[in-house]
Structure formats: C-alpha cells, structure tokens
Length: 296
Image (cartoon, rainbow, N blue to C red; front, side, top):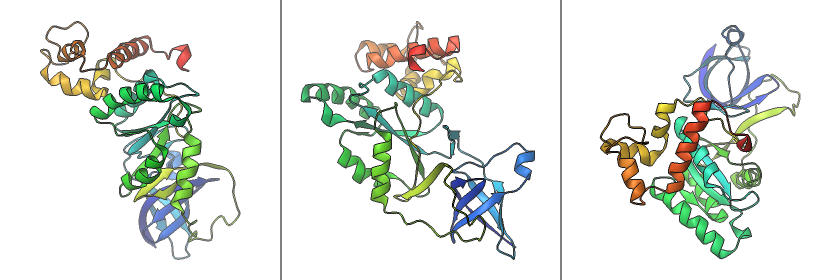
C-alpha cells in the first residue's frame, strides 16, 4: 500500500481523476468524506491511497485556498476576466463588480476585452482609455485576441489554476475552446482498472496550459457581493486600500470622514469617478442584503 499526492483534474460520475507525478489515477473518495459532509472538488490538492491490488482511494483533502463558482473549482489562483466591447455592451459597473468579488476571494485577475473588432475606432479608443486606468492600478489588460492566445499560456505558473469569468455572451466559451485547441493536450491514460465504462456526465475538468491548468468551464457569469462585510468592502478596491494608508482615521470608509485620502485623490481625478460611484452602489447593495434586479 502506498500514498501519493496530486490535483483533482476531473470528476466523472462519482470518480475523481487525480494527476500525480506518476500520471493520472482514477479514484473514488472514502466514505469518511460523506460522514464529514465534505466533497472533493476539481482543483483540490489531495492524497490518494493505492493498495497492493492497484485499487485507489482518495483519503485526504489538503487545505484549500478557495472554492468558488458553480460548478465549483478549488484553489483558483487567477481569473481571466472576459469583458465584451459590444453584444453585450462594455460595462465598467460589471467590470468593477467582478474585480471586487475576486479581490475578496483573494484571486488575482487579468482583463481581456473581447469583440474589440466589432466596434469602430472611436468607441474602441474610449474603452481603451478607461481600461488604461485599470492597468495603472495593477490589472493586466489585453485588448487583442492574438495577444491573449500567445501570452496567457506563458503567464500560467507552475501548478496554478486559472479559470474564466465574465458576463454571459462575452465570448468565454469561444476563447476557452481556442485555448484548449492551442494546448494540444493528449488525454492521459488512466492508471487503474476502475470505471472502464465511458461516462459523458462531466461537470468541470482541468486541462494543462502553460505550467499549470485552465478550468474547462465557461466560468462565472454572475456574482453575489452581499456576503462581503460592509466595513471591509473598501479593502477590495485595490487603489482605495493603497490610498487609505494616508487617511486621517484608521478604518476610514471614504464617505464623509475628514482627512480622507481617497476622496482627495477622487477630487484630483486620480481615482476614476465611476469606480467610486460603483463603490457606493455596492455599499447600498450589501447594506440592503440583496442584488439589484437588473444585475441578476
């Protein structure tokens, strides 16, 4: 009997495909997980036990970084946020919602403007001007599909798990299919005799891209900010958090407090007005405990 560690890359009809140093092992979870009301997720780092007959069981889930989305992906380290230029129209409000949510989840984000070729140069220039602000505050921005195709595999670090996010219709599935095709990944041989039958019910799986993985799922299309604590919301606006170090009062909410550095930078035009307006709208949403109807 031996133990091995790996990453759950697929869930198929109750079986878990785990990528280990020795290859992909198909395994079942021990009953102890049901007793503890735990369920392994794609992306989990796990320990598996292989007995003398070659039968394998998933016996331990390592501590998770996070578990987000439906279907759930665990240990997401980065999100490629797909925001469309048109159909649906470009929206700074939606962009801010996604960035705030993933900041709360401690997940880094890269922005990709899709369908940029479907709008005129003036409109594209206007959108790029807005996105330049996000690049200044630390978010990588891509506005060209070919750049994404080349650069994203280079950006995915060792054992990192990336997934997609963005509004419905933004082109996540199209991008995913192209990236999968570019990966030229071969289907790994399953190293156990378990579950020989072919199953087609798949929720989510990971495929190799760069030095890590990309989740084979259309990603998140809507988000709920209401679980965020109201007094912590400002910490998830990266430029607010940075500026708050110079605020007069610790725990400043950047509303009407004297000596607020965020309000000062806002008045000087160094913080985007729409970002601050979206911050106020999110505060209202959280305090009322409900998502506005038009955002559902």
